[in-house]
Image 1 (cartoon, helix red, strand yellow):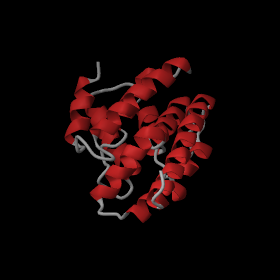
Image 2: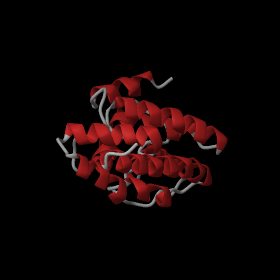
Image 3: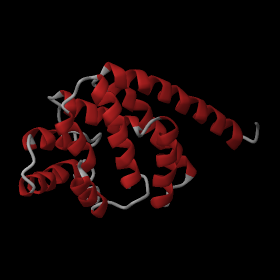
Length: 184
């Protein structure tokens, strides 16, 4: 249904990596699941999920992505452009802004959920490798960002998912600490 947007999104992103299109695919899938359960407007949520990281290479990727998405959506005469643009504009951990619609809240939550749990660990390791970061910075990233995310979520459903993923990461860090000290 949104093949044209998927093609555009793929062209603007790396295919793999901590913020590659594989991340976008997971965000789209989780938005579908949560959006349906929370009766979100999928004509807003899914295009926003598809386009949310098209400007990932820019310093304020959420703002720049929202601007790019608006032009793309206007050229294609999509409905509900302002709602889609708002969701993209406020989805980012670092970009800030208050998500004022259910769809914007879900996209923000799902983007953060993808940084938690097993996928979060995978992405943090990828990011560290992509930026030549040592193990100490990888571990610090958990404490500086990842372990704070569950407290920034809007929806109860996302908070429930985040709690499980948060505990998984805490257990991972305990095990990693043991291994780094030479024990099992």
